[in-house]
Length: 160
Image (cartoon, rainbow, N blue to C red):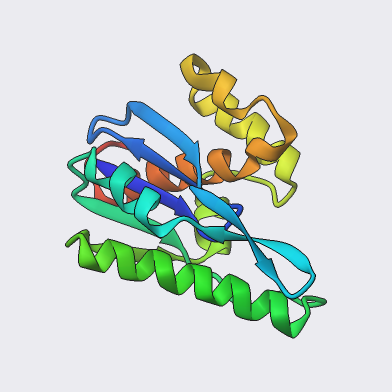
C-alpha cells in the first residue's frame, strides 16, 4: 500500500493500494492544546501511530514543505515541528519515505495551486470517493490522495 501525506496539524493522509484504488483519506489526527492564552492545533501522535498501524504501508510519499512567505516565526516553527513529527513517526514504523516538492507532483498530476481546484481534480481522479473531498476543508485530503497516486505512478507500479 502507498501513503500520501499532506503534512501539518491541519494536513491529511491517504492510503492507496498498489493498483491505484483509494481505500482511505482522512484528516491528520489532531488535538487542541493551550499555548499561553490561545488554543493551538497539534498532531495527536498516538492517534497517528494507531491509524497508520492499521494498514500495511510499503511506501510513503510526503510533500516536502518549507517556510511560506508571510508566515510568522511561531507558525513556521509549529509547522516545521509537525512535519518533523510525521517524518519521525514514519521512520519509527519502518515506512520508507520519498519527499516530493509541491511543484513536481502538482505539475505531473495537472493540479492547479488553488485549493478548490485541487479538490475538483481529486473528484475527477477518484469519482467513487468524491464524498471525501466535498467540503472546503477537504483540500488536504485531496492533496494527500493525489500525492499518493503520483507516488504510485512515479514508482512505475501503474501507468501514468
